[in-house]
Length: 353
Image (cartoon, rainbow, N blue to C red):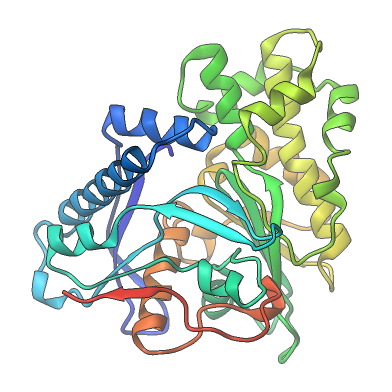
């Protein structure tokens, strides 16, 4: 919830062309309400409905700002992921909940909107996540080398792209990306995130605590699997810390190492064949200590996606524009080899202009 990412992207060719991109701040009061809801604060039906509408209005405003100065009549659709509040595909029945009323986006922009991408895959027995591997396959797969695409947002997820033609693409959420580090630095310094990993760089890893954190059963669970910040939450961290003492920067350094260690272990345990290269996108690509930790732990080159033609900041948002295009063309947006769904499914709901 650090901001609303918006991209204007041309998908006419096989390689997406990003025309404009920006991150817009949430209205402060709305951000606080969303964070409280994600922490489990009880909402009445009226409060929930209002929050959904206000989130949709914020998304519409972001869309209008990103298209300012561009021809409105050339924009086919908006793909809106929504703001996740809950994600538990392993429940019975499984569920995933994103706020951001698509009707408000259509009315605010006059542009057809595609939203609600995850729930169809979950209804088909899948995890509903990650959904970006199909996009990664189309953009980053190479017949010359096996690659892993690593997205480090609040949650980290990987896509394993074998070089061998016809080999299945796989992928899953590895666990916490930036979410626990963000939560801790907000609590300790009042900052939204650890800029350039500076706070973590001041500390030392608490090896005993790291070992304890890595014992969470999620890390050893084989894919398909997915998780969310409602699981790896501030409450999860408080329970894990218990009576642990020591400098706050040591906790931050340990959380950074947890992110790197869980990612590297997941790649070693579950990516076959082993990758020749790891390409990183998402906010974590801008954290030098985290990138160094990954480079130290992985036996192959680690570099951000900029080297391969796409800014690490906009891969995820571009992927949901691509998924919206798939929906409009009545094409599947999921990969059953990734999510575990019973088969390919057309994802999302279309709200016509």
